[in-house]
Image 1 (cartoon, rainbow, N blue to C red):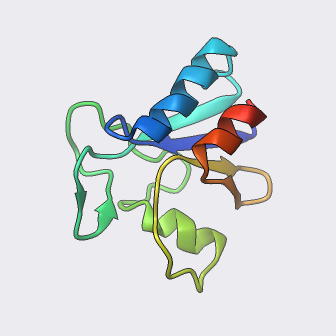
Image 2 (tube, rainbow, N blue to C red; image 1 turned 45 degrees about the horizontal axis):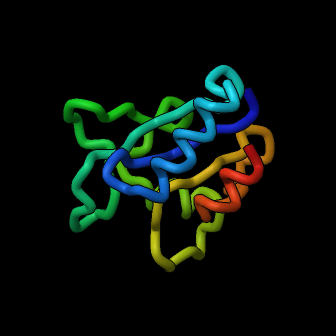
Length: 103
């Protein structure tokens, strides 16, 4: 598929996008990775832990790396969910309600 979804199971907003991805049967079209449940000093990370699914696209260690990959000057808040466009190499959206509507 052309899109990738970054989520965290502890975030109810990200959970909404997971539900819609499943209900619409988009698992083969929208790939998925899951951050560690603790939002620590480096923000959301892919630290090895049960339930974590590492980033298969870039192998990043922290979600902020995805934001700066989209915009190298980005200094704002890093949140989940994030819908990434694999073709353009850009963040499509990081607002759960918008992503759910897109699905």
